[in-house]
Amino acid sequence: MNRLENCKKKILIVEDEPIIGRLCSRILTAEGFDVDSVDNGLSAKEVATSENYDLCVSDIKLPGINGIQLYESLKTNQPQLASHTIFMTGDSMNTDTQLFLQGLHTPWLMKPFNPEELISAVRQISGRVGSYSVRRIG
Image (cartoon, rainbow, N blue to C red; front, side, top):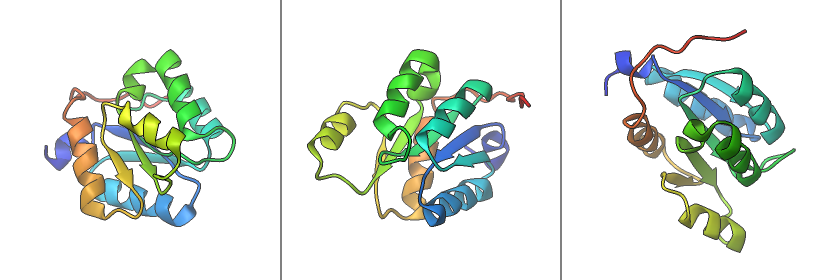
């Protein structure tokens, strides 16, 4: 997938740690994606209903609603986006987190991860998303 195809894909980053959120945004913007970022689950839920995102990269531990609750909302309201969501976590020891990640059919990232791992996961998911222009709302 080349950068021209990437720029047609819009990604929502959901990360409450500012440094990680900015880093993910910079990495994916440099790869040619159109990236928006929010710092909590409630904002992500709201913006996901008003914008057309091709992919979502979300932390699991978030203020407001956590990543698992966000995913459940997406499955109901934006099932296509739910199936194109990549989760990040530093909490692999939590049983609920382990069970959740094991049930996904998408890649997930263990923090800390390197830029190549993020790019690889996004490319894996974006290969399943059709190349089309996304109309920006608002």
